[in-house]
Length: 271
Image (cartoon, rainbow, N blue to C red; front, side):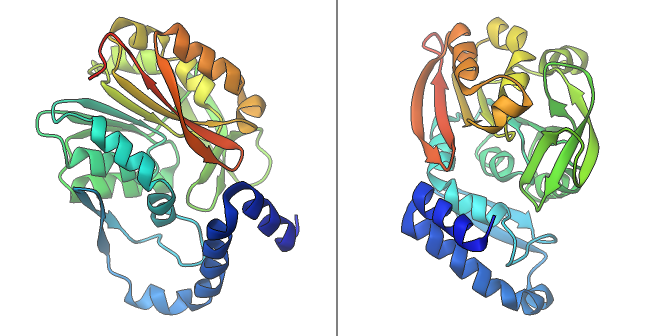
């Protein structure tokens, strides 16, 4: 796909602001060699009243990374923070380097974070960020699906990680059913869940049915990747149907390219 074609698709899906930001990033990226010499080891970022420090080891001006996600997902992060109580258990599925884990974790007193991130580099940074911010968390370097085993995961940049058929640059990751992990490790049931796993959302939820049915969580936030999910397993419609079958009511929170966000609330425990 040519640069012009990518630019046109970005403009169509997200408008002028997103296109301008992408062009700016490309131009600023030319000075990345200087930035690498002066960047701090950790830097603090805030969303609303929540603030956390993040490891800058893999931060680059010419690549999409967690700072770009902080900006593009700010409204979603604010919404997640607004529904979390200080004694909640927060599950971060597809934690990457821990944006949600750390920002939510700083708002908890007696609550805890349970985070899942299968890619080795991101998991290492996640660990350092959680330790840096003194977050009470349990971390698992696994991909949640509906089967226990192994799978190939493609690695594109710092945030574009997805299950794949093994073509291109991949790493082998362990796959686990959430229901089995909860039982084996005695994990507390989640009160709030965030899911962003690049098309594997149906598989993860399919392996989570028993836990969600046993003790319903009051909020679940999921980015549904309409195209990727059909390639990896399931469909956008099946994700929604599964959530509704678990007693959730869905609200649409907006779109990002071919993806969209839903907030699922459980009437029996909604706060």
